[in-house]
Length: 153
Image (cartoon, rainbow, N blue to C red; front, side, top):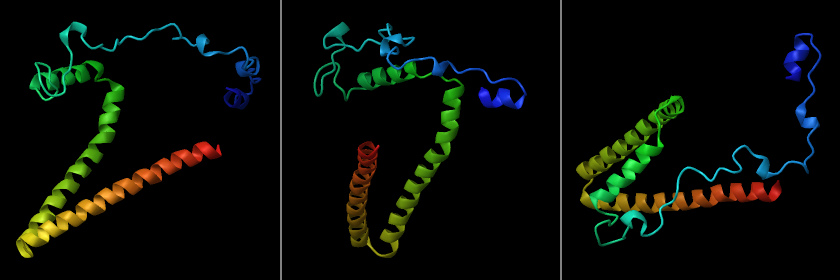
């Protein structure tokens, strides 16, 4: 506010932040401090929706469990301006990942056609090991960024 008003020739307005004392502010002063939240997490045995891992009417692998999960996902997502912007950003990345997968399948088919089945098996095993190693080392590398930045600053 000070930069804009000083360019127009008006006197700069005093900042409210200079008046505040850091001992007077607490998390209880937030606008939603007394809000318990809108969503209540289901407890086991609540309304008969107990999720079982392997057996029973509500087993995780049954289509009804997937339908309930999808309905929950749809209920928390709204198609608004923000969702539209996120989808516009996600679409090129999704298409790129799809093309990368199709490219890998075509390459494996060409290796199998021109070199042979044993070469496809060897290529697949090598790419699996290289991919796992790359993902593991990438995770270690990313965690190192986080830990070092927290330790330093």
